[in-house]
Length: 190
Image (tube, rainbow, N blue to C red; front, side, top):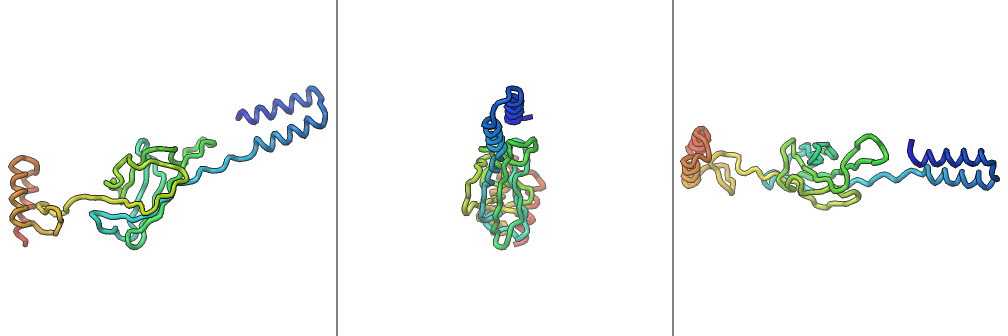
């Protein structure tokens, strides 16, 4: 039982015990109406923007998810629209219930694209702020070049100088034997 309900019962008991006037009854009913007014719900934090991987818009239907960094609780999720455009609300916990419905104020957030953590915003950098509106908020993964041996700018092929740099990384044991073989194969196909 909440403190408000206990107080209301005490006042009613006191009224009937002491047999006070009708004025006391009116006072009690007005107190109960004030005490029973619900607290307005917490406003979600709203986002809209674009989702990109290595600067390119993700395909329509890609899933983005927002979680509280400390608990991994999902507080927002949406499928991306055409051109990588999304709109998403981060929901907050209602402290008047025992159920955990969402984030708490200033919780650090982590964004994911199809289950892979975004590099922008970096994990924990974005904080939950109820009622805030975030316009043109880009969510991105910068994963580097997908072809072994290729170097930024990623052009999808391995040239002579990129292969030499990759051999140097292999000599320093930064990359493994099979990675080097993949780079040589990618170099040989141009």
